[in-house]
Image (cartoon, rainbow, N blue to C red; front, side, top):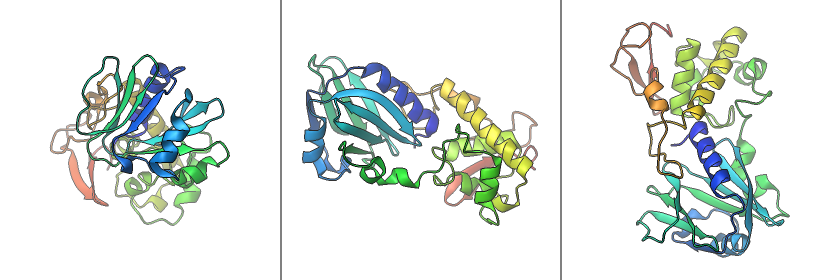
Length: 278
């Protein structure tokens, strides 16, 4: 599933490609892709004729302001959703879910193999967290001032769940998934199975700093090669080649040579170095 760096890469691509993009026509190829109130019919009315304004990101959600005063277009890529920019007419693949055209015949195509991706149209008179309910459950952004060691200490107080599991909780911190949880814990030197409530303030500050650094590095690399993620040009990111532990189970640690462990934790694969994170 795309995580914060991949979603941010898509946001930047959409902001670049869809600057002043006027939606002349919309085709919904699969109705379950539309999650907002009113279903497909309301979505078509809301977006057709609108101009795409500023793109923003909240956790793993993407949102575009629709102009003039046409509300918000929301997107969640889920596991395999991706946008494709099409300049010449072509036959869509069987996994195409939603299509958007501008007056010049250029097409923005939403393709989703697993069909878990969702879109919303939020009218201008509806609160964003009402129109897209998942937004209300999100914790702070990793780059925000609200996400700090004291916040983590308060939220994790007396918690017995492993810190790796806690990092995957979008109510604790928005946008972090399996890849960057593993990588940040390695960078911070913290074993993933450590009960979250036992971490000291110094460890939590190190974890916060490591998470921000890892996410920043991955955004600069355009995301990771480890998933079905592709940007608008069909290219995936380069962070995969820089990963310290993720998907390196059974291989020697690049820092100390110890064999990287791969354990199952809360149903997810967890990769870590027993020495560097001992």
